[in-house]
Amino acid sequence: MFVTLQDMLTAGFARMKLHRNLPAWLWIAGITLGRHVFVKALTTQNTVNHESVHVAQQERDGTIRFYLRYLFSGFWRARYEAEACVNELRSGVSLEALAKTISSSLYLWPCSYDKALMHLRAAQERM
Ligand SMILES: [Zn+2]
Image (cartoon, rainbow, N blue to C red):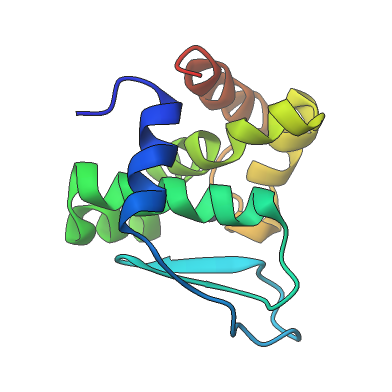
């Protein structure tokens, strides 16, 4: 269905309904519920790109399967986040910094730093 991550970005953007009303006090930058993407009023393009990949992931894998995997499997949560984060390499963020973020408390410690790097390198090959 999607060969490259650019395909996912394009599909995600085409389908997403963007809401810039996420409260500023929340610790998360954005959240995607089906086609609805909620971000803070002053968000970055990286965050919108990230969430658009989650829209495409739900289209590819099915929304229910996506959430079951995301919530109950560290492997899948890390894999989904690696796909969503890897575009940030284009804006100068390092692979190591992304691996540190993905393996952190922000995503409820889905995997080790090394496993996050592995997921990111796999996603990078599809850029
Ligand atoms: Zn994410």
